[in-house]
Length: 332
Ligand code: TRP
Image (cartoon, rainbow, N blue to C red; front, top):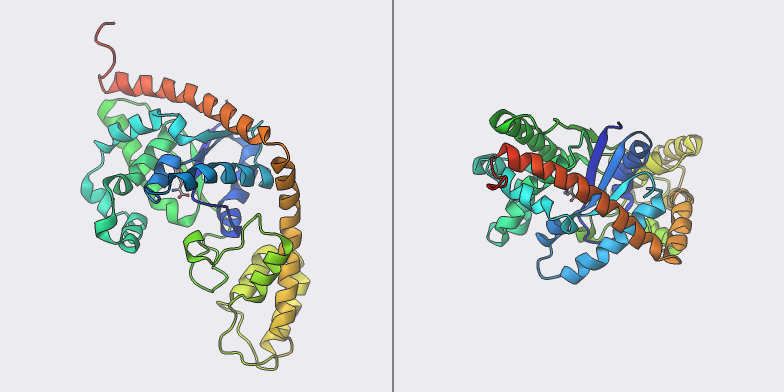
């Protein structure tokens, strides 16, 4: 039997280049070797958008289209809508008994997200989302969790909870490993730490060629450089970061860097070449997306089949969990 992967995404909007190099690229490779469950975490998204469930509903479809467009294959992998397998919620409740409050308060990712939200705005549901993520991973008994860097603490928590469950109630769960993507954190086009929907600094997988070009031309570069003849800085310059990550022509990148440092190339040329590289990278994804758009059944079929498949596995796991925790039927 193949080993299992579970990973997921909150459906809050379209996916961007940061998702690709931080996560999707890894998933594409893993789907050849592993039995993969790709989760659309709509329960979890409610923690961010409690008053905008329509946005979540639309994003479930958007995310699925992006997945199909990059080449995730529903014939090989299971696409799962979290809320359509309510066992996710039941397992979250049961596992939350095993997690000390103080343990969650120390989770660095949760901590910074709560600070960003403002402590008064944090709901109990949001606070508990790392535990729901633990349940997501353990429900199909995943062996490996490929995620972005910021999600590592949640996988660490998963390992602890799985161990504690097994010690307390008997061996049910494997202890999953984590795998972080090639580019743990892709800077935004504005030069801030991370590409993120909420900061409006993203290049989306579905952006057309003109949009990509205009976003690249507005990109933040070396702020100390006033003209094309000033020597520029490569380090911490997002334009060159993107060249490194997305431009397969390494000679071109090296030539641009050499000339930039020497004050022998203008920003326009560097950016135009980046726009071309990004558009070459995105073009096949756009083409597949257009095919998906013209055949809406692809999305529906992928979600139905994957969700039904996980549901079966979830029922088996929950039977084991209820038995282990002595919650199973009193009549048999
Ligand atoms: N927190 C992840 C994100 O925001 C989504 C997610 C939910 C997830 N459940 C998961 C990721 C389980 C990995 C494993 O993108």
